[in-house]
Figure 1 (cartoon, rainbow, N blue to C red):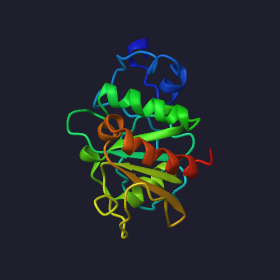
Figure 2: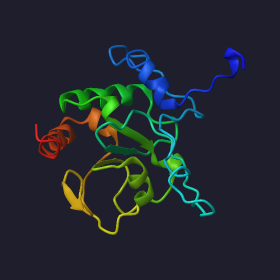
Figure 3: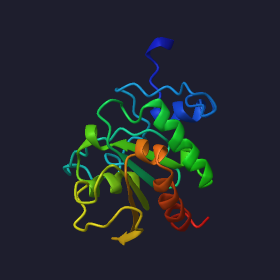
Figure 4: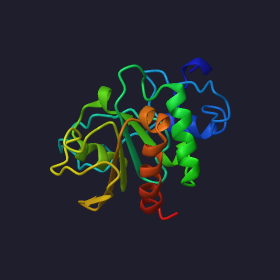
Length: 186
């Protein structure tokens, strides 16, 4: 085996480059290429008894390390996850909430379009932020207005307009911030 054939898990790569993959102090934050996955391999084959059929689980691409079980759903046609400016703005919001990109999993709903339940199960999400994705569109059986913290099935949800709208409108920022403070107890 040559050095060119070594395959590293995406989680290991992200751990090796914690400070250089995404740097929020610059305006030129790179977006991840479409074929990148920053997730661990699902623990399925080793736990299954011999001869048992293991159902295939769709592997979901996300940005971040998901260390605190916070799922952020966005809806973008023009980027793998988020355009650079919106990613910078989201990073600033997370910093204000005493969080970082390492704490969350950012999933672009436009490219994923899977059921929310298996996605949450795979990622172990306790908190779900919906930016420009309605609760019904995400597959929740309940609908609730923007900025209302909603408990459902042991998870906490918060719906908001698109990040681009939040960034532009001071009134939307003022509505979002108290909800985030309450959601994350800050």
